[in-house]
Every structure is written in C-alpha cells, then in structure tokens.
Length: 311
Ligand code: GLU
Image (cartoon, rainbow, N blue to C red; front, side, top):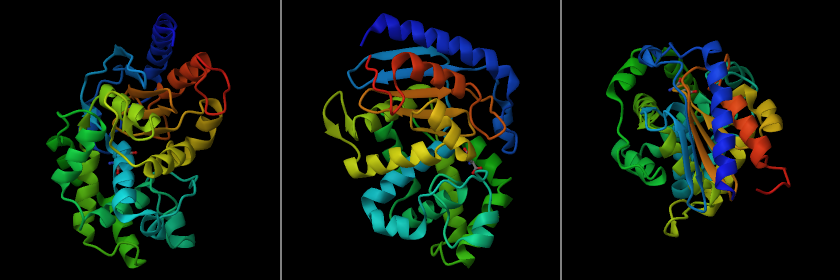
C-alpha cells in the first residue's frame, strides 16, 4: 500500500470533514453529550498490514454509544449462538429512526435488527445472565486493543436521567415476551455499554480486527469467531447507519456503525479499520463529517465493497 498516497488522501478527507462539521449539531437528548465541541474531528486508519495513520483528534476520549451494539452482538453470537440471538431479533433494515417503537408496537413481534435500540436492548437482556458489565468492558478492551476503556460515569448518569424512551421500548419488549430477563437491569447494562469511553484509534483497532476476520493481525491471535464477524459486518452494511444505511452503502460501500457520541467504526474488508470521531451529527444522528470523509476515502482508495480497484 502506497503510504504517501494514503497520507495525502487522509489529509484531504480530513479537510472535507472539517468543512461540513459546522453544519451539524452535537446530540443534546443526553445532556452530557451536548458539552462536546462540534469542530473536533479525528480519523484513524489502521491497516491489516500494520500501518497506522492518524489525523486530528484521534486520541480524544468520547462515548462509544451505539457502536457498542456491535460488541454486544458478537459476544452474544459467540456465547449464545446464531439461533438464540435471531429468535429474538430480526436482521432487516428498519427504515425507522434508531429509537423508534412504532413498527415494533404495531406490526412486528421482534425488533427489526440488533442495531436499533429495541434490538440492542434485546441483545443486552440475553447477555444479562451470562456476563457482568465488568466482563463486557474487559471484552471491549480486548477487541479494541485499548486497556484504558472505562465507563464515563457522567454520560451514564446523564443518559439514565433521560432514559424514558428506551425504558418504554424495553417494557414494550417485555410485554411482547421478547425480553424475558430483568427489564431495568437490561436497560442499565445497555446504557453502561453505550457509556464506554473510546477513541478514534480504539475504533480503528476494532475495525482492523473485523477486517481481518476476527484475528489480531499483529500477533495472529483470534479475538472473535469468523462466523460472528461475518454476521456483524453484514449487519453493519445493511443497518449500521440507521435509516441512512441504504444511501450510505451505495455512496460509500464500507460497512460502518455510528454512535451519537460522534464515533464511526468502519471496516474495509481485508484492508483496514477506520475510526472516526466527529460529534457534530446530521439529522439522522450520524457523524456529519463521516459521509464526505468515508466517501472520499472509499473513492480514492478503492474501498467500496463492490469496487474491484486495488491500492
Ligand atoms: N445510548 C444512545 C441511546 O440509546 C445510543 C444511540 C446511538 O448512539 O445512536 O439513545
């Protein structure tokens, strides 16, 4: 891989992201997230061959939010198995906002997919009897190659004080027999996982491991099963950007998961992991810089999943 080319492309992608950041807004429905600086931007590219490229605020800590849904999903798939997980949650894009409960209430007996809140709350309820939050944090540290991941107490408390909508979803799931374990504890586990502090670099590490089918390319250690990784990447492509997933797949074509803390986890298969931090969000709750940044990287480096170009 041509290092100079990647550096140049990364710098231009960063400038494109910087240019749109003022047009978005930081999330405020979790008040603590409203304190972020919307002009922050960091992009990390870590290749499976061991090259690392960083630009901007790549070591700044922020909460992982919905990107934790991938960590919980792979853990659930490995420990409970495909059939158990997908007996409780579907695998279809919802076309609805991340915190919607309309379709679930009226037309469905299980959440559309594990990336929307109803699906992730369901996965958390499945994990509740199996793992403590401390064990799940340790797993997050392992797959992000980041031993400093901790829960951000202020963000956790802030979300728990404004959690009515997720609580409503969780009780709706219980009423439909989808959540069978303790509802309040499932909600707390989900919210704690959303409050883990990561960096763009941790996300690039995680993306790199997913790109390498679950193996840490630096030492050959398998961290996640190939089967769980395959499912996670597929769900990221189809559902990772909420109701913006289809358009993102066409224009960018890199399986990606967003979080309202401003993070993006992207996987260019067998090539690289990309981590982005930009807390300025678009109207769908995705990092607003993510689209121009990743679209440019995809085009210039041939990263679209159906692109035959090789760098
Ligand atoms: N903790 C957030 C929520 O449940 C995560 C949402 C997101 O990152 O999209 O509302």
